[in-house]
Image (cartoon, rainbow, N blue to C red; front, side):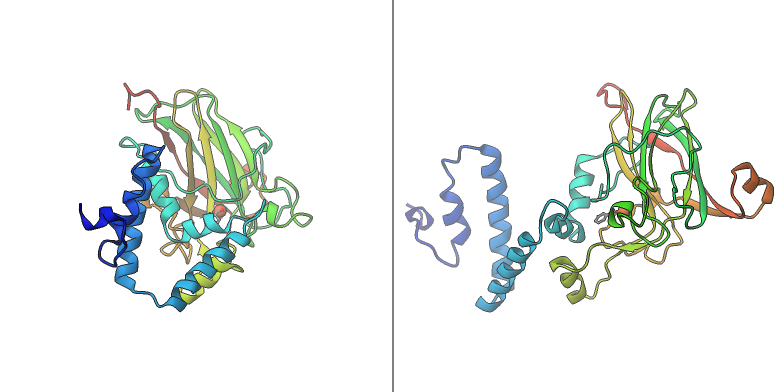
Length: 297
Ligand code: BEZ
Ligand code: FE
């Protein structure tokens, strides 16, 4: 009988003793997951050699993180976000064929049932911020337009707040909307240029970032969910490459392919054509959807 099979625990055999207890696990996947997690956790503890006080500090951090979670706030997801785990799970589950647009995190501010609007609508309902027009095409990986695709967009305002964070200050559904493409796959709508903003930083995750010398900011972006029959749903953002936080997103959501060009347009006739009072931002971005058929790319 090997030492660990006796079930007696030592510093050296800690991992083997613990996972041997799971031999009769009723769920094979759970058994496999717990084997990996136990191995990595024991490796980490052996490498770090925490003091009892440090271990208690870690337990208190996790306890407090759980206590902060409620219907509106999910501090554990935020922890996963700032550790890069949300983006890693997203990447593993959204491997795309060549040419298809890349995904990124959903974030906590999506609202179901945003109004479906006609192409060209202005989703900025309070006339605040700098005018912006966003346009482009939704294509398949062969370059053909995707008709009847739904584009669900939401973004923060020019002060870095979503409507749901400023109830009674911003109108409901401000800077949100759903658009449906026609046969040409084209989309366009008007909005206000978003600004960078901090993720919630008044809890355990904010304190952790502070201790690690990290800021809590996300660079300016627009969120999108694109859905069309025959295609994988795409959850993504487009980012302003000139944003001061573009290379240090607190949740690691930025990918090179998601950088759009924000052009400042001063031509008065262009402003007039879009019913803008003056200069505006012009953003063009094409989305490429991946087929959900295994026999096609
Ligand atoms: C967001 O972009 O809305 C977001 C993503 C992750 C954490 C917090 C906010
Ligand atoms: Fe966001």
